[in-house]
Every structure is written in C-alpha cells, then in structure tokens.
Image 1 (cartoon, each protein chain N blue to C red):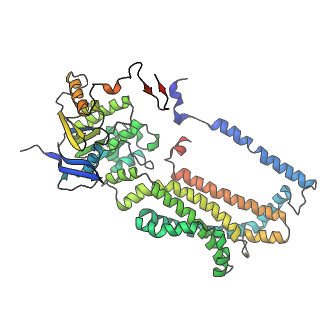
Image 2 (cartoon, rainbow over the protein chains, first blue to last red; image 1 turned 135 degrees about the horizontal axis):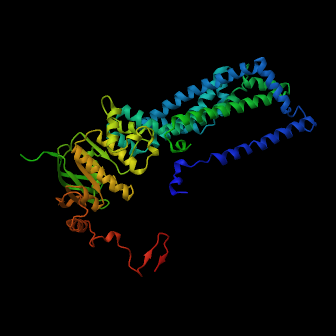
Image 3 (spheres, rainbow over the protein chains, first blue to last red; image 1 turned 180 degrees about the vertical axis):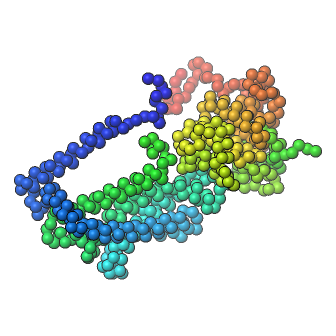
Length: 269
Length: 255
C-alpha cells in the first residue's frame, strides 16, 4: 500500500463500529427477556412492576384511545412554552453581556448568582406566586433553561478567537456585520451545547412541575396511575419521558450536523 | 518630482507601558515597491506592520498608509464557518462578489476549492486563500506578516513564486515581515533590518530575479545576518561539533 493511502480524510471506521453497535443491543434485550420471565413466574409481582408484555399492551391501548396523545400534547406544549421563554431570555441576556463590557457588568453577576440556585427549589415560591395552574409549571421550565443557554452562549461569545475577529475587522467588517459574520457563528458550537443541556433540563423540570396538581399531561397520568397502583401506566409514562429526552438530543444533534458542518469532526463523517 | 510614495512614517514612536517598541522610526515605501523587514523576535517588526494595517492606533500625521490595504497573517485566519469563496469575499462591497472571489482564487490556483470548508485545506492552501482574500481588495499596500513561516519548505518556495507573480501583475507596495534572510533577499527590492525599534540597516537588492544562484546573494546574506547578530554565515544550520555537550529537551546531558 502506498503512503498516500493513509491520508486522514479517507480513513473509514464504519465497518468495525457497526459490528460493535449491533452487539450493543444484546444486553438490553436480555434484560427485557429476564424481566418478562420474572413477571410470568411471579418473581416480580405486578404491583411492583408490570411485565414488558403488559406494558406494551397498555401502551397500545393508550395510543389507540388517544389518551396518550392528548396528554403528551399538553406536556409538550408546557415544555415548549417554557423552553421558548428560556431561550429568548437566555439568548438576549447572553448577547447583552457577551457583546458589551457594560452589559457584562450589569447582567453577569446576577446570572452567576442565579445559576447557583437549583431551579426546582423555587417550586414552593412559584406556587405561592402563581397558584397551581399552568403558569408555575411554564415559569419553572423557563427559569431552569435560561441558565444553560445564557452561560454557554456567553462563554461562546467571549471564547471566539480574537485573532479571527481582528482579521475580520481588518477586512472591513464592523458593528453588526462583525457580530453576524464572525462572533455569533464562532459562538454557535457553545450555544448548541447549551441548547442540548437546556432541552434535557426542560424534560427533567417538566416531570417535577407536572406533579403540581395537574389535570392533564403525563404527570397527571403518572399521579393517577400511582393512586391506582397501575405500574404498567407508570412504566409507559416513563418510557415516554425517556423518548422525549432522546428526541430532544436527536433534534440538537441534527441541528449541529447542519449548522456545524464546517467543523472537522463533521467533515470526517 | 519625487517618485510617488505609498507609505510614509515620520518620527514614529510606539510604547507599550514602559517598553518602547518603535522609536523615532522613519520609513517610506514607494508605490509598487517590495520591501522586506527583517528582525529578531521582539524587534518591533510586527508592531510596525500592525500600525500600518491600522490594527494599532497611530497618529495620522506621523503614519500615512493607503486606505486600500490588506494583510496576510502568519496563520491564515480564515473564518472556519464560511466556505472558501465567502472567506475571500468577506467585507467586499458591491455586487458579484462571488465572481471577484473566484477570479482571485483562480490566480492562486484554487478555483477548484471555491465551495469547500477551510478546515479541509492544507496549510499552504489556506495561506493561498488568505493571499486571494488580500488580493481581491486590489490593495495599494499588501502587508505580509511572516506568511510563509508555518508552511513546509517546498510549499514556501512555490509561495515565493506565486507572490512574485502576483506582485508583478498587480503592483501593490508590499511590506513583508520575515525572519528568513534568504526569503527577504529572494523577494524584496529593499531589505530593512529592524533592531530595538529602529531601522539598523538597509540593503537595496538590485540583482535580477531569480536570485538564489547569484554570486552576490551570499555576500548580501552575510551582511544582513551580521546586522541580525549572526556572525558566521550559515551558522543557523551548523550542527554541534562532535564531542560537544548537547542538552536534550528532557534535561539529560549527552556528551
């Protein structure tokens, strides 16, 4: 083989990776089989944990009846509303703090203080302020997501290579052009890290927020199921939460693959 | 009438805190003249270039430099999130910027790389893009800040040819900052040696290009090296004599 064949761009790792990946399904599948066997032989009582087959049936019936879809829609709307607010506020604050020294002096200390507070600890206060309707739930998600967005975007803006900015400036960019063409694209990778984190936090806070006296949504389903000891319904809801977290991650990954196509890590694949 | 001047610096002093980087410096560069600036690290050569580029503040009465100017940095400094042609076209006013960028990239023999990401380019290619980005602005002053220091020796030779060809075609005034004496003699009309913020020596190179084989090349080289504090000609590549103490980076000493 010639030396030229070792050019890094042409290295392909896909074959061994794929074999490993197929092997990775084995242990979860085995766990599922053991769980099913345990339930059927009575080792795992239904009131402790429903069998996978029962969970699957329950999932199917909840899908067919529309119960799952309608409650999922309520939960998604909450998460989306909270996240949207958190995103807008977080991005706005990070731009103010990141792009001007005065903005940093004004905004950053407050955000650094605020981020030390676990957002969920605000739940009782928000119930006192906003009652037990939708407002405290959405506000909780918004507050929790502001911080990862802000912190990462702020760090991203400040972390943009000063040499690149200088070069862009020397080629005639200034003001908004400089921000749009040089600073923000440079901060984008950090922002996406923040977004990914915020999506995860949104799902987490959603779970807790929905325990506040909800009359619809996944949390409502879980609370009801708990009262009737329906472990199958609880597991279905857990699966849905997991799927939410997973899809959130996939969404950001897809965004990254599109928006960060210029990065070497994406160029290789 | 005196020949037209592109750059004029009069009695210019630049300090950073207590250190004086440039002191009472005078320099003129004619239109279309190729000047190389040699100097050891810390001699102030990059500061001088940055001043001419407008990156460092300067009094307009002391420093006159054309508004149409462009820099090629040591590291190409391409925006990694912009395709090659967009990097070339960055900040260009007017329409058909793509066509202009394409023309500039054709001149540096990279017309086939218009739509690739900078991260896929080799060091030499990236530097050629940086050259195209400077050229597309049709500068009256082209500032080259050790642009070939980070590329391999073979690429450097090709880049020299390219820069000379582009300089002949577009005739900008060029200020090349370098620490490579051979490079300075090969390319420039005039070589300046900067030492402690002053111009310590000046050498006009009247040899016809290409110059490497010219018998006078070595004489000029020795003179310039002497100004840079290197006494023995070619001393920079002399291997240590046998039996001499050699300190290895690990700290161990081998005889």
